[in-house]
Image 1 (cartoon, rainbow, N blue to C red):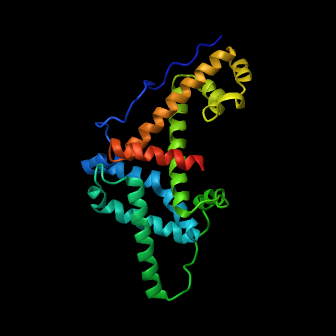
Image 2 (tube, helix red, strand yellow):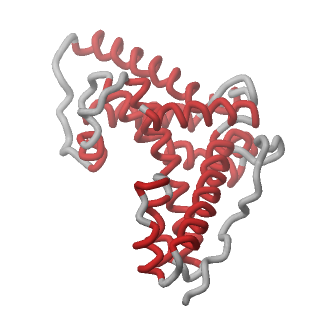
Image 3 (cartoon, rainbow, N blue to C red):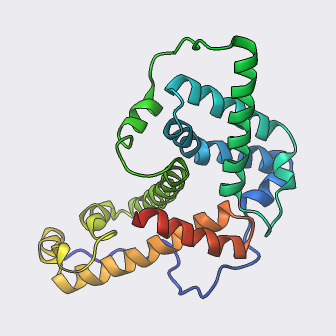
Length: 246
C-alpha cells in the first residue's frame, strides 16, 4: 500500500489574515525588481477579467484587447498604483473603476476623431475563444469581472496544490482526489478513488479533507497577496465566495 502524501503546504487553522504578509500592492511600492515582478503579476492576474468586463459591456474582441493593453500600459508605467491605500481601497474594484473611466475616455476620443466607423479587427486569438466559452453565462459586466477574477484565483490555487504534490512524487494522489476538491458528500466516489490508489475509503476521505484545507489556505494566501492588507482581504474573500456561488 502506498504511503499517503505528506502535507505539501501548512494547514494550520487561521482565525484571521495576518497583517505582516507581503502583498502585491506593497511589492509595487517597493521599487526595483520587486516592483517589476509585481507589475507583471497585476497584468497576468487581471488581464482576462478586465477583458471579459469589456466584452460583456459590448466591445468587440479587437477593441477589448486594445483597451486592456492601453489601460494596463498606462497603469503600470506611472505612479497610479502607488496611490492605492493599503486598507482604504481594494485592488480589484479600484482597477475596474479605472478601466471604466479609461473605456469612457477612449470612446469619447474615438467619437471625436472618427465619428463612427470601426477599427479593422485582428484575427481572433485565445482570449476571444476563452470568452466564447462564458459568453452565454448570465451576469452583468461587473459580475462577469468578479467571477473571472475568482476563477483565476481558484485555478492558480489548484495548480499550486497540484505542483506541490507533484514535487513530492504524489501526483497520482492529486489526480485521483482532485474531483473531491470542489465536491463533498455523496457526490464523491471515495470507495472507487481509494481502490484506485490502493487505500481504504476512509483514508481517501481523510486525505481529500486535508487537500481541501490546503486549497482553502492557498486561496486565502492568493487573495491576501492581491489585497492591500488584512481587512481588504477579508472583504475580498466574501466577493470571491459570492462570485463562485452565482
